[in-house]
Length: 205
Image 1 (tube, rainbow, N blue to C red):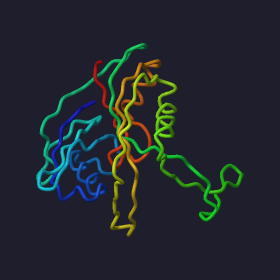
Image 2 (tube, rainbow, N blue to C red):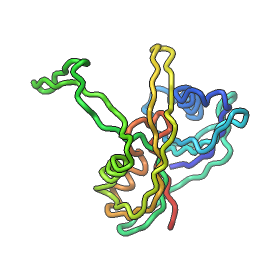
Image 3 (cartoon, one colour):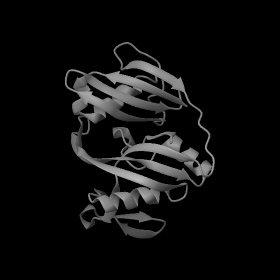
Image 4 (tube, rainbow, N blue to C red):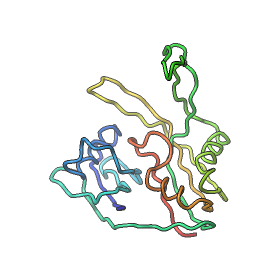
């Protein structure tokens, strides 16, 4: 895998849907493939652009008029049971609730009421959500939860707009299942990965 530092013009900052499209330009010829990269906006400001941490299975390639690759390195972390790591994760903690207004759906001969995602807004709910995500691979030792502003996006082709509520988690974890942890490290945690959520950054304690 590869870990890269990316800079993108600040005009893309108002719409994370455009930001996601811009990052695809770093992987030419693969626009029809499933997304295999995760990212997190580390710093942004009008006039200064956005500085992004990008984790990908393929090495990004600089293209004309695309995001600027500031630095990159190949990573191949190994994990062992009992290993303690500092971590950072921007996530979109949600739960699903039934929504009768959306109607029903048929699955395997059974009828189910459609559901929708709603954000978890209370800190104890957000911590419980993260503990569930980690329960088969790691144990939380310390945790700091930082609420963040609502993130808005627009999809012009579909004439649809939306918003997600992100949370920044920082803390220390202890690995209990190295194989499961390695898989999650590669694939990310939770929904809204196209909008900069899910990247699990780690460092030695």
